[in-house]
Figure 1: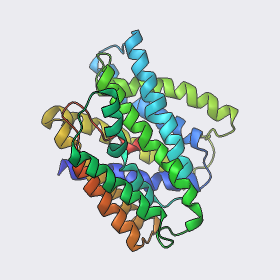
Figure 2 (figure 1 turned 180 degrees about the vertical axis):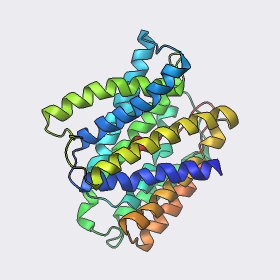
Figure 3 (figure 1 turned 90 degrees about the vertical axis):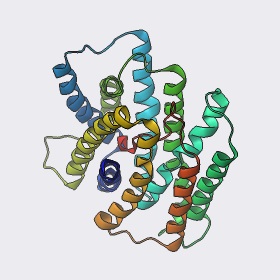
Figure 4 (figure 1 turned 30 degrees about the vertical axis):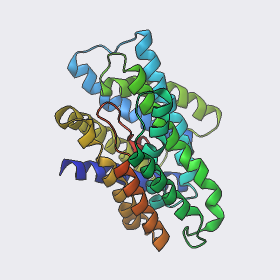
Length: 295
């Protein structure tokens, strides 16, 4: 039941992101407020825990990796893609994280070759093919060029997971990592948003986009904290199965909230992606799924 609730929560952030982008908010402004809200939520928790956030070199290094490779770069790509692609398609594409993470893990020498996992990668990219090859797959075939941009996000999430698996967390808990990354991310994205005229002013009359950003960020903070708790209770391998529910929930929430109607090719792609995720399952020491919500 907890996995289903987590999946529904993370899946809900996908159509909320689409609403925020398609109503005119710039991606850097959105990412800043995502960082800020998570920083406040986890900062309060850190204060009550009475633990000081580490400023050691190893900690700052991992904070920067999570901020840039795990959030700023992939979220920028996802938000740009969200302006053109349906939420359901984004949900399916984000499920390719394991397909990219596994070959990266092989290259870094932290995982071993298995034929079943290669088969999973094949199913995953067959799912991508079903999105771009048939003319009737996407509601607007002219936006096929956005698919590679959307795939930048899972590539970076795969890099992030492998970096943490190889080099460790600098003795920081997952929540401390996200808090440190959010602090750094706030400074970086605030500056970039101001310079690019993308800052989202909270002191103007709010639109549906403003509420969507706040709601998605709060949901992400709560769901991520719950996910970390679940990992400590039942382990990474079981908890990673939440990726199935995130993908399916993202497609269904997009249908409910955004009134999306999908072709048969989208559903075939979703099936291929779920099969791919099942085959490219993570080992206990490496988590291939990444909280899309940072989207």
